[in-house]
Length: 416
Image: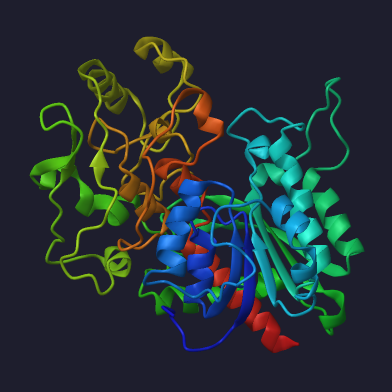
């Protein structure tokens, strides 16, 4: 098992695992995986390649569960006896139920069926009865909706989930976490819910105070500065102007290009961490978007008009002729704005293009030897059905956030 520690922190199940950001972090914190649930075949392929078969493997996958993409509902239906046999034997259930209906960045929809996936999460918790829970979601999970009549609902959905988990016998703590405080070069605020099974509670305790106390030691262990890591520090070595462009895929004339990456002789602290032990190895997913000439001209105009790190104003949108709701240029001297699943929400700070999948992965804190599988993008009606590489990375829990949460739960286990 590839781990930053020799300790055996405990066993966990990852629900809604996506491409494996949370699990990668938990593995590095010394946890051993039992199984993970992800319904999208492309995201699960990435997960399986890295975390079950590859360098970061740390799962003791049960024989009764096929090694393939699936849903919680299917597992609950098909393997009730096997799940029941796990009752009380699992230390942690981790997961971030898909949350597009709660996102403050998109069209908030209280009836979005994806919101109901939290209920499947709770059904699994009820059967397995783990000692600890960590549920990660967007900030909007803790905000109220307006109902069909335009009336604001009294309770945010997070509080409904909290009440249900308390009824299942958990003491539940909630707070917001800022990824940039834990070495992730991204302003990604997340709503975190931590559950401790009530029979394990002995003292007054605030997990989030303990988490805050772990912060500086965690950054020191990673050899990272105590101040937030900037976008330029994270992806400055991946700028296209620094390398020859070579063939990636498609036709040789009209096809996609990528940089012929060779790591610079001197890497900064964050780049060193992302490339630990890799020497001259090239990361995958370096494909550069094939923008049309008019798109490049539009992006050049945006780079001139847009204040780095801020969204494009309505006035500037009119000048450019775009109705796109969110578009901004990265500020190289600050952490990135929150990555989304739409690659054209953010433009590179100095080049008229969207980011590569690898640049997004760096901003999420995935190491360079983490391999992403499947298509790069999906368009049209398939967008809600498939999870290509850009979506996998945008949806992921940043691995370093997963790691520090894993260290927190390990610490909680030591308290009781």
